[in-house]
Amino acid sequence: MKKSLLSFLFLIQLQICLGQLVLNTNVSATGLANYLAGSGVNISNANGQFAQSSKATFTNSGVTGFSMPSGIILSTGPLTNINDTSLFLNSIDLGLPGDPQLNTLISGVVTEDANFLEFDFAVASDSAEFEFVFSSEEYNEYALTNFTDVFGFFITGPGYTPNTNIAVLPGTSTPISINTVNNGNNQSTSTGPCTNCSFYIDNVGTGAVELSNDGFTVPIKIKFAVQPCVTYHIKMAIADVGDGLYDSQVAIRFQSFSALGQISILNNGLPVSSPMNLCAGGSLLLSSPAAPNHVWTTGDSTQCITVTAPGTYAMFVTGGSCFAYSSTLQVVSSGSITAPVIVQNGTTLTMTGTAPTGTTYQWFQECTPIAGATSSSYTPPALGCYTLVIYNGNCEASSNEICTGSTGIAEYGTETFSIYPHPVSGSATISTGFESGTITEFSLFDMTGRMVIQKSRVATPNFEIQTGNIAAGVYILEVQNNMHNEIIRQKIVFN
Image 1 (tube, rainbow, N blue to C red):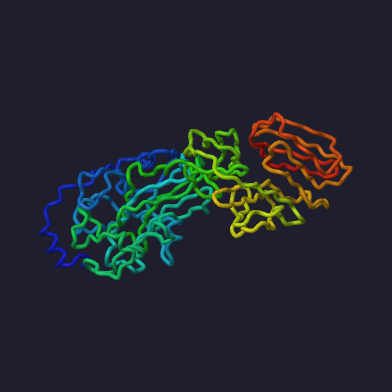
Image 2: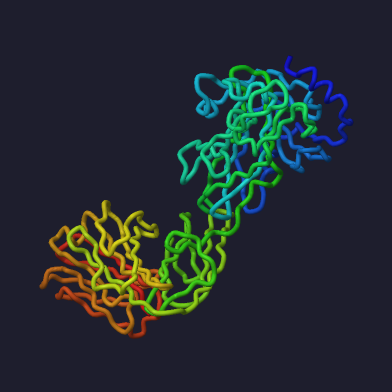
């Protein structure tokens, strides 16, 4: 027998349950999805597979041991007897097919009675979260066996391989199931061995939860990264395994599917907090997570910007009806440092000059720090745009950017392209490495695309640029030579 006589004699002495879950099973997939949508999340295109009685919204009128106040439930069987005690056996075959994504989470057995809700969503942040509870009638006697029901939260979108399961224990890659969260296998109250049992509530003979399933997880929050205002797809699915009996359920909290804070502004790839120090002669490389577009308070529309002056900085992202904002970063003056200058020698990028004692180095490709690239020179393994950031005490400074490519200047026998000193204060020398006598054209654009300076028919390898009336900020220097089928673009910063 599934329930022992001792459990029965114990439970009949418990007081009559007063609390219950009030269910609404007459709800559509769109209604279920909208019930989950919280702050900063737009949900659309909901659909699903379920029997009429195997899905519901609920409100909690005071069920002991079940702290979720309201939400939705997906079940592998009817929810008719959910408010019974754990003496009741939830075990009804719905006759529904299984699910191919859930099949990938198990081995050698196929799923049945699959119920799932899926929808598209966009988040006004760089991360999101939701809260759920998994419960099952298969606890405790089928723990650590092959007859364990399965569920998953499958996300598809930028940063994820299709149908990545994020239903894992917090901080791990361990899928949540009866076999990974339990306190052993037993016909009655479990006594171990423990498997992640800090997440487990045993309901066999304990009266811990005034609901019918024999085991529950504690409320678990799933937190995951997204690109702001980008459309993702999620599928929330649960199924019986091996047969259609011994039902399981997953409950997801009302409006818990929500944005997790504001967009993080990053410095050197790590989140920053205000205020930040900026040393004279130095710079800060600020970036935001990947997104469809970026708009900084500086007017820049790139993912990363180089900050060379104290002030207040922030950015936002838009996409359709989604608006995602960062926190505000205050940058203040402190200390001094000399910005590095890098040149290209063959295939190697090298810092010119000698840095002060105690200086450390980090190379970046675009906005991303390169693991292990922490010396004053670097040989890129692939095409791209590279920058060196140096650190000394509390100060940091970014170099000029060098872009390598199949039509790069090094392939035509030239060796260097540099701007020195950089950032530019007063004047700087542009060294192209082009052959003497060839004709080079220089154009300077601000970040709105407006041409600020143009100098044509320069027949020398070097060219001097004056600050003059150029306002402080970040510009794009475009260089084109008549002997080479290429256009070189470099960021240039004026103080």
